Image 1 (tube, rainbow, N blue to C red):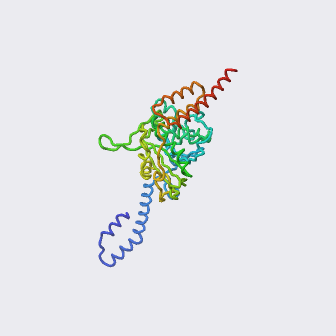
Image 2 (cartoon, one colour; image 1 turned 30 degrees about the vertical axis):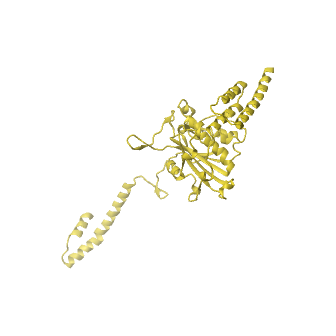
Image 3 (cartoon, rainbow, N blue to C red; image 1 turned 135 degrees about the horizontal axis):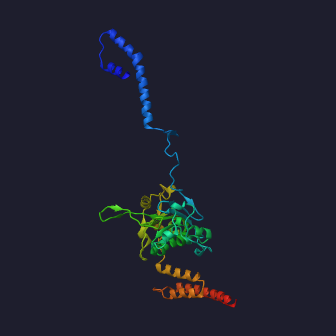
Length: 373
């Protein structure tokens, strides 16, 4: 009814003063109140239609009535490292360490450590050893076991699979291992503070059709993601060498390494990238508190040279001899040293000969004691 009156008043033309007054009075006292009431009813109906059964929550719709979707904690702390874990890929996003020269000194031994699932995360989001078995990929530490010789518990923590990624076995035992030694042994001798963040990357490559794709393998029943690349970003402070001209840092270096075998002669600097490039690729801002600060390139104040592959081989043999539990195993390692395909220096020969002779006396005494019993 009000609609028809409104139409008549809006489109009709009244003639004569009496007619005008009468019509206006009718509109003011009858039609206009009806129009307002109808308008309010329509607005209420529209409002209810737009947000059915929705109650305000803090001035907003209650989008998360049954809880906020959870991808796990942003950070979890362990004895000597911290990490952020990717529950979908079953590998870490990043692993952070504060390395000192004292961390690698002590009696902790990896023989007492075992790879195992990290119980800090729900089992449906965790990797298991069975995922790696016969996969063709090694279990690569992001926080290395060798950085934790000062404490057995800290070393054990590095064997939790939340700290592990599927890594090419040659890369793990070769170039990446030498990179870890550089961070563990060289840097703490040249800088007061050394902090390292390591992790996996998934970078695109161009397909046959000219388009870019991110392709990666997954392993095991839990579909553990195999990264295409690995990274380390290093920040040091307090240079201990006078050659730094009084510059104390911070010094920074970012490196992206392909998850594949790398020739022993390739230098570390070949894999150095701008920090911003690594952050863009990983989606991680590694040092928010340093944002806007000038960071001096680490490799301009340090050689960024890794130990040679030959020296690494000698280290492996030395460790085997030191860890030998029988004379037979010791002799096997000694023969391995004699058959290496390069000529070590006199210093290295003298060192390994000393290790061999000391260990042989120790084991012979131990075995003779067993014979007497």
